[in-house]
Image (cartoon, rainbow, N blue to C red):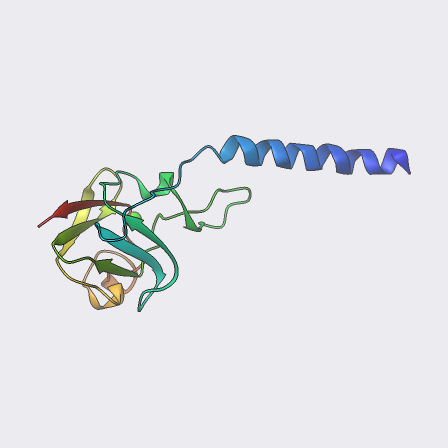
Length: 138
Ligand SMILES: [Ca+2]
């Protein structure tokens, strides 16, 4: 019994250690409620969300609700955003790639469904596409 349990305990420890090691990526915010933009996992401002009032050079480096399916991967916001609320007086530019590269789209008002925006990703839209973004006051 002890011999059989041991590998389980060891692998549980390894998984825990990996989680701690990989959990080092930061989450965004806190962001004041009246500043910047809010990104959402789903269209129509649904699902997990994150308020942002700063530029994010790599959405793959901040905690979010999306993974690419690899085992042990920490979920991020990369290629994950499907709608964006833009608070009055703010603007957001979404980029296809990290470090503000690739095709981009600038939003000056709410975008309830990024599949409505022509882009470089699946079905030629900006849905599940953004890998970096800039947030600025208009
Ligand atoms: Ca992307």
